[in-house]
Image (tube, rainbow, N blue to C red; front, side):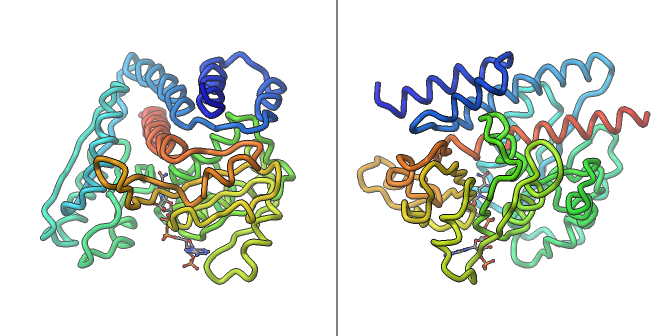
Length: 326
Ligand code: NDP
């Protein structure tokens, strides 16, 4: 067994054992090269979600997620299939609307409004990106913020900025924060550099980490394509979160010895050695960066599985809130 596989096994055992205290978790993340296994942590969260769904169902409430896809983007189709499958595995109600690329904005918004009014649906997700003739923002704004489990509606963005925990937080940054918490990485007082400033990952990530409380209280720097001396900025990070969509952009020289690295990037690159001719890599050059790190997420198997797990958790949270009102 190589070092990587060994650390994966250790982490699986770690993730499966809720009872361990945070000191043990911290000790675990002091290992020389420590892989944060998103797949194992997501599986643990899904187990919790399955139990929560069973409890809600016993009380007469089945969490319902509606996913809407316009057009035939193969990557989006795969994401939607994954979400639908996970929903069903957890015992949730799942509705998939696959609409032709010719669907108009008016038709799409009409569907969103029907879902807003549907009491069996607690969560609505319109898969991004829609075809070019559709204004994504107008569609997001049409979603009832109380069903916006993606956390993209201005009301939810505002609540996150205010530190109001009543809203929904986008699933990918929420998953990154949970990975840090589960791996026992202390964010309080840590210097965090978030590389990327998108509304889907970078900005909400920064807000989450600077907000007060567990998994927050960090000193956050947000870097982007206009940042001067990016390498030096990244080297200041105790925790570096890369979300730029540039394959293996972050080299060893960007990373302080002993830093924790969360790689959000998912990039398909040519790989003639693979039967498919392609492979997925992150935004971090894993093989050269990993030996410098206290802990690092792999791609695939790091942040990706967490995004879906957090979508399920947000849907359950939404169902609970609606149930409390009835
Ligand atoms: P966007 O393209 O929306 O944003 C990219 C950000 O990175 C921008 O802020 C951009 O800066 C910055 N950037 C791009 N190139 C550079 C560079 N060379 N140096 C510094 N900054 C740069 O991407 P997303 O945030 O949507 O996604 C980022 C990555 O995360 C992608 O690989 C995506 O596939 C992945 N992803 C993974 C998810 C998961 O579940 N694991 C979910 C969502 C995304 P500027 O603003 O200045 O242009």
